[in-house]
Length: 113
Image 1 (cartoon, rainbow, N blue to C red):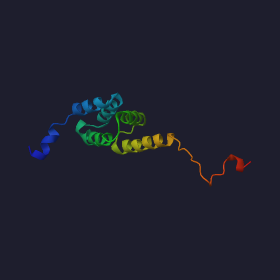
Image 2: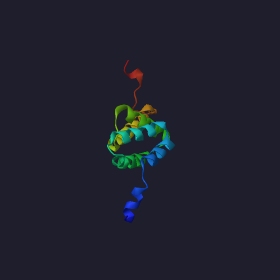
Image 3: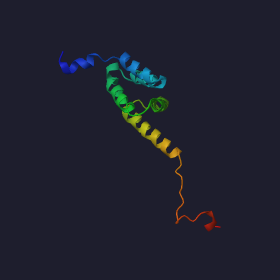
Image 4: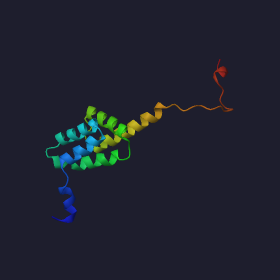
């Protein structure tokens, strides 16, 4: 077997399930759902690797929340999961309101009444 193909021989669905299990139960469920959605397990390997790459830059709590939402809506590809990560991050940023500072141009409630 050529050296460029040897690393693929080491991949198995169980290997990806172990990786997902180390993150959490929702992520493991996502990997199982991806596995079940493909006719052959090998067809899901690229998707697994894409999810792994996406989850490397976020913490496990975010990964679990994104996995749960992906399972809920049936988003079993990297594009859907990437969009869910962006949506999750945007919702977390808007949840914390910015404090309004004192400024000379701010009129306040007394100006309008």
